[in-house]
Length: 286
Image (cartoon, rainbow, N blue to C red; front, side, top):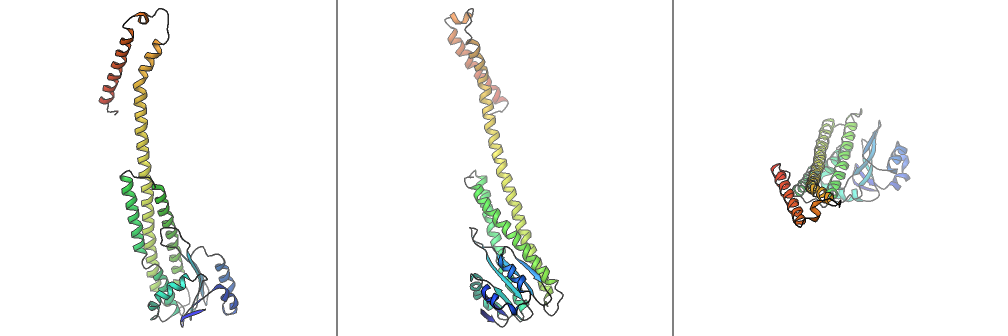
């Protein structure tokens, strides 16, 4: 167990099990710690407990930082085993020193977790603009791989902000005025999470538009190929008829014994091709 100030303590889950008699609703807290997959809170009369699951902001989808929390009027207890959150709090400890209550500390902790997220979302937006430029220039080698990573990140953060917003709204509605004194600050926090979530949803819509743009380009390219194949097929169709006609080898075909028959067929074939090309150009088929 590590105490950073009178109302902030970080402990591992094993120590929580050893001191379970000090925690009301211990079973609910331990059940939440068993499988931390998202951020949530459960409000009771004398405490608020739940879990935090913080997504990484790296390019790769790394493991999420997760912990449990137990908030009372006197103290905020964070439960984690990996130590990632502990190291992060040690870097931010100066910002927490002037806070007077455990509730203010928890609110500031949640605020700091998303402090620079707008810059991160702007970074993702620039990544999307880069993908769009490559798509416009016709460079689509790893288009789906890049788009899939962006879509996964945005889905992850969309759920994250929605969960934090729900936690803020739940704490704001706590009926204990002695425990929750900063209702207006929690209201501003909820609005901030909603704005971040709206930003993420806008970026997700841009992802959909990029996929539609890519699909339209693929359809246009496929239509162009089909048009070329149709023109080529139409171009050689009369020649196929001509060769099939003279390939019948009937006995009374005067052209077979005519000494100019072979050159005449060649000239006719060339004339047919030239006339077709002129017609196709006039109709702007190619």
